[in-house]
Amino acid sequence: MRVTSIGNIAVLSLALLGATESAAQATTPLGPESPSASVAVMTAALYNEQANIREAIDSSRAELATAILRNRLSERLGEQVAPYHLVDSLAHSAAASELAGGVPCNVKVSCAREVARGVNAPWVVLAKVSKTSNLIWLLTAQLVRVSTGEIILDDSTELKGDPATMVPVGARNFADRVARTVRRGGYATDYPEGAPQ
Image (cartoon, rainbow, N blue to C red; front, side, top):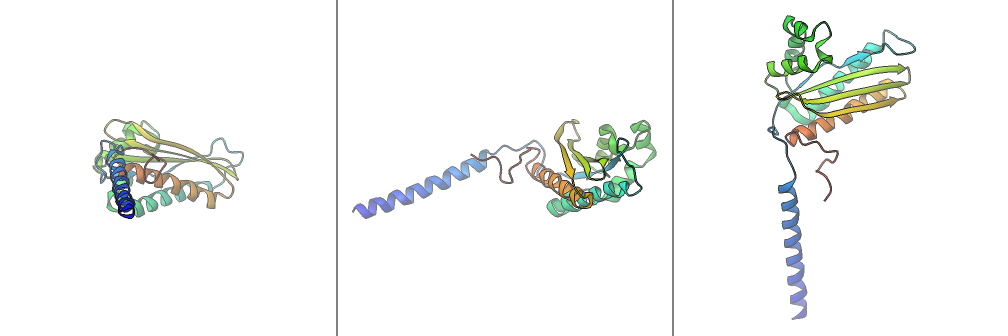
């Protein structure tokens, strides 16, 4: 009789634990966008005006950040990532140049939002690679809700060491955060499965 009671308690405990986990998952906050919403990824900008040495190879660091961001987001979000050739074409159009007011479209949120609207993407990603010295770089990147201009993610990561190694690390980390946030409809979290209870 006692064994049966302990067995029933164990079964009841497991059932309650399962119900608690389901309730926690059901109440995990989600943002207002669809988890399958599209994302436009702008070409990463380069800023090296303050660097102690400027070199021709500096532009390749921004190109590397762009490639890593786009590839990683494509791995994570698949067809939710807007076609790059369309994003780049719109970003270099006459209308974008006029809207950006003489600066590149990929450094102006209002212009990037217009590009994202042009490819029906509720999200747009902007990034900038800044050089301080050959061994100190900075990756700043934002995820912007196109409808409101609200910056949902705004990261700044110091990249110390070989930029060929560190720029990809920073770009991948940001892309992973973007993918998690988009999949949660705009709810930003550093935790892959949501905040711990």
